Amino acid sequence: MKLSNVLVMVVISLCAIEIVQVTSQEKIVGGVDAKPGQFPWQISLQLFFKGNWTHACGGSIIDKKHVLSAGHCVVDDTNKKHYRVIAGAHDISKESEPSRQTMDVCHISLHPNWTIYNHWDLSLVTLTKPLVYNDRVRPIRLAPVGADPEGQVCTTSGWGYRFYPEKKANAGNTSDILQFINVTIMNQKECGDILYPRHVSEICAYDPEGIRSPCFGDSGGPMACYDDKGPYLAGGVSWGRKCGKNVTAAVYSRISEFHDFIFCKIKPDPI
Image 1 (tube, rainbow, N blue to C red):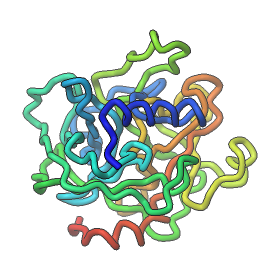
Image 2: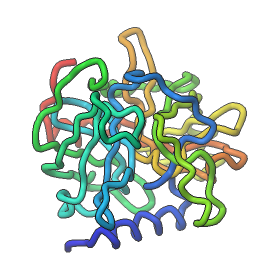
Image 3: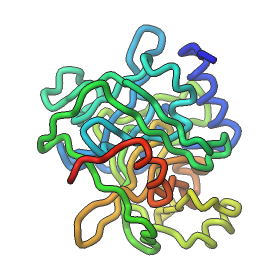
Image 4: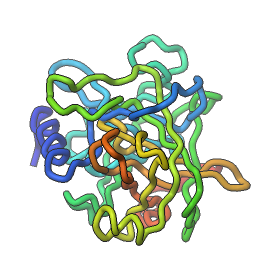
């Protein structure tokens, strides 16, 4: 069934209302300006809406023709022509940024077990042509199978809201500059006690001060953790409580649980 652009935006909005999901049109609360090229795997997934391209969600480059985002960001695969991917961006408001690579979407694969309750909340976006790697555009390796970064300090980045909009009229206080925050990976049981029992496909992280979190527009964006080989993609922003309001935790898709889905679809480039 084909959905109009309007319906896509409505569905995303409804998801946010139902479960306070960190969805399209959200931003990093309490974030710090990233340096140009600091997170070269970060992309902006954009939706053509009312005659304009609009930032909808974040995502991560995993090879020259594929990016990962959240499942709830792309609710209908048949709308691939309504999406584009921007890689290499720093100031999202500047269309003329020389570092940018703008890519059309060839195909969108939603995880077959995705549900509106955010289980298996991942999508694989295939580009029509390969990205050109440089110091602003690079892939990030996937979390190893069985990776358990509990207690680690990791990094989330995005262009989402700076605060939770109590009213629709307040929506739109987003940063043009890519933002990032450091978050700590939680014990799964501890997270379940706060945010209901968590699914195997999810991982939780929090700001110890309780004031920083992903927000609307950050969905699908990367949570990068680090080991002796460098950064790896541990999570993709999925959902959370009201961002910036007594933050307890945010929930991410646990990338190490998605290897079968990803590698069934692609043969990744060596990194």
